[in-house]
Length: 229
Image (cartoon, rainbow, N blue to C red):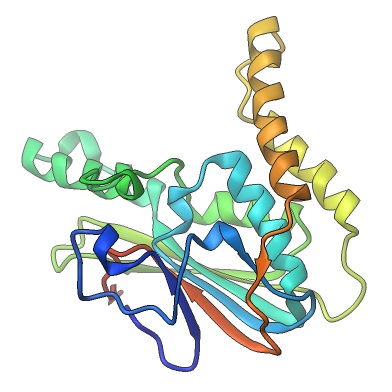
């Protein structure tokens, strides 16, 4: 899904079954690129965000927040986990199989696996906790039968004083703790691994893309336009 007026970032077509269809402006793993702070008006992700592990996703949201100009926004579309599982047990196995693929990915390649689930409520809680404001969500579908709902969220960086990076990091660690089952020793070890991954991404310094303002879109190679609700 190439979008004019954006810097489209994607893996090379040869790395996917959609070879020849995806023609990004920049062929790269989106986690390996960066840009100067306070420069972008929009960052848009089309069916990419669900491919990140939960610690990675939080670190990237903080990174992208600081890429945005004050008043800039992120637009993210993912499968809607809550919408997908509504009435799931009442559906025939064939429909369930298609819904499970939508949730967990098509899995024909390493990039085609989904690592986490998102919904309107979860987006509002996470983005709000990291300092984004004016958060709104809408629904689209990836199929004509409306079995495969997606959630699109738009969230803004405040025009005024926003949270410090230190506050965002602290809040992100609190969000990570919400995925712990309890405070047992094994869960603390697991949290420590999440924290190490998160902190490594927060302190990494990817190569800059050299943007002087504008918008960036990132999407995985299998992305296709969604049908509006």
